Image 1 (cartoon, rainbow, N blue to C red):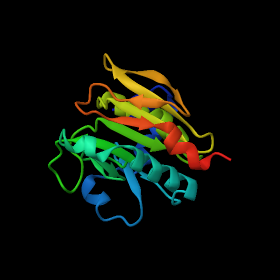
Image 2: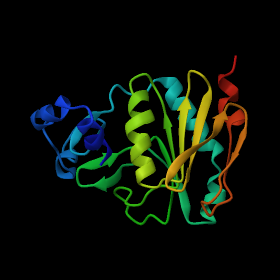
Image 3: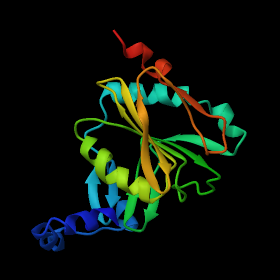
Image 4: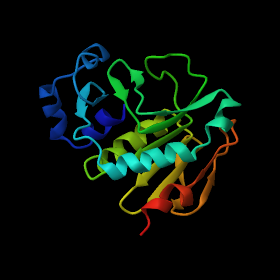
Amino acid sequence: MFLCYNLRKRGDIMSNLALIPRYTYQDYLLWEGDWELIEGIAVSMAPAPMRIHQQVARELFIALNQEALEECACEILYETDWKLANDTILRPDIVVVCNEENERYLTKAPKVIIEILSSSTAKKDETIKYNIYEDEKVEYYILVYPDDLKAKVYKLKEDQYTKVGDFTKELLSFEDIDCDLELDFEQVFRKFRA
């Protein structure tokens, strides 16, 4: 997968990987706190998100029209585990997933993933998760920068993400997800503007 591939490019870092403990989904189930597991490597999600992160997440959740999704067997979920493999479990901030039958964790690639960035997660969200989501064929990946009241939107085209644009007050209409879904960034960010 992506993490090991990139580490191989860095030479001596690869030799140090043997010293890092590797974990599985069974280990993950026993942990306290908030974690993700990427290719067997435990990644802490602590500390808890700041209030603006939670407030922006709430506004995004509200702005996505659940009624439109119900017509096409899709739903919006917040901080739900996505099990990509026995050694890789991610927990995106917000997902739009369709026809998912497993109640415990996601088994299919979401149609839309939204990650709300903080200084402690930005690098992981912009690089490692970006590449994983692209490899897993997530149709839309949205990076939200709450301090800047801006979102970067990427759409999968020919198995690669293409930047749709930077959104601050614009309306995003999702294509190719079998739902009539829109996200109004003016509505999302309105209450945070001074």
